[in-house]
Amino acid sequence: MNKPSVYLDTTIPSYLFEEREELQTFVQITRQWWTEERQHFDVYMSEETVIELNQGNC
Image (cartoon, rainbow, N blue to C red; front, side, top):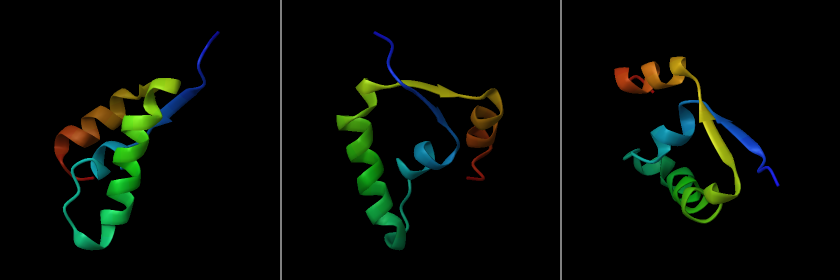
């Protein structure tokens, strides 16, 4: 059986490294999803998203 697909923009990977206090709730939710739910999905990211993440402007 195929897993559902999830296409990531820069938000999810960015939240894994976010340090601003006002965004820590989102960071916690993102980390929890990545740990507990990610294995239930085929996760994809566009080349443009990877380039944006590498630029550090997210």
